[in-house]
Amino acid sequence: MSDKPSVIRETDGDARKQARDLMHTAAHAALAVIDPENGFPSVSRVLIAMDTDGVPVILVSGLSSHTKALGKDPRASVLFGEPGKGDPLAHPRLTVRCATQRIDRQGEAHERIRGRFLDRHPKSQLYIDFPDFCFFRLVPLDASLNGGFGKAYILSSNDLMMP
Amino acid sequence: MSDKPSVIRETDGDARKQARDLMHTAAHAALAVIDPENGFPSVSRVLIAMDTDGVPVILVSGLSSHTKALGKDPRASVLFGEPGKGDPLAHPRLTVRCATQRIDRQGEAHERIRGRFLDRHPKSQLYIDFPDFCFFRLVPLDASLNGGFGKAYILSSNDLMMP
Image 1: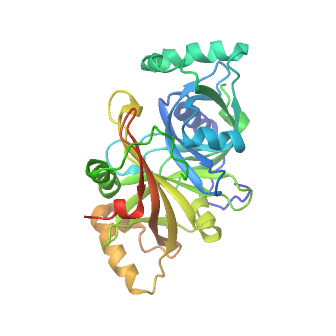
Image 2: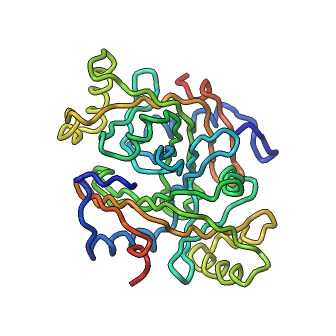
Image 3: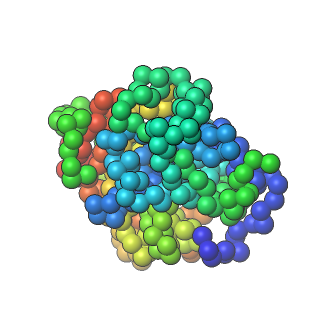
């Protein structure tokens, strides 16, 4: 995202708010990682909750391919925003590039994140304490917002922080 | 996807049909590529149509980051399947690893794919002939189907072909 073609608009308060709303209200998202076996990009659906500082968190099984991938390469990108009715590209969406951080089950962050995750996803109680499951924080590096046709923005991690 | 933990079920006719249905009825999907500038995975939303042989096709702008990425590295993966109401992970989804093929605007495939794309996305008429737009075929290599909790399958490209 280092090149800025002229189609990229100047980031303003409305764009920041739209991006934050997409990220902070999401119940799920598409997570892209690098498959460590062959370098292929890989994308899958994950449940999303939000840590107290506004950083998205995911709960994943150690058996899943994305968990294995993040163990080898912490780089990820996450697509937020669901298409509603009509043209899927007319609905806003946000791609956030993230540095992922695995949460130690014994650390103090785990209990806080577990509580917040349960609040948003009560049904995760069925598996949230399975021994192979763990949380990752998805710390935003930068983001690309597409607010609909012709409304493209590039945002910094600061732009995504809560005001 | 070369390792098969025991949680992977034996692929059967129902799994093949579910995977094909997810891929062939999709209007949009999440496309993951490798950013050629820094090796990061990148994910974005794309419109999907289907070529006559069942291979998914996308129409993308040359200005978009995924188009630039595919010009450097044709490997991609695509997430099909939309969550409906309730738990997002209870709804089936399919990750397809693909080798992408750029469609030459002068070749005979272009007119065929253009027609099929317009049939599924009539509003794309507004930009389908813009000079910087082009089609890619997303030729499936293999796929991972998650049909809901505990229903994981690995499928070959043959499994995804129309019966």
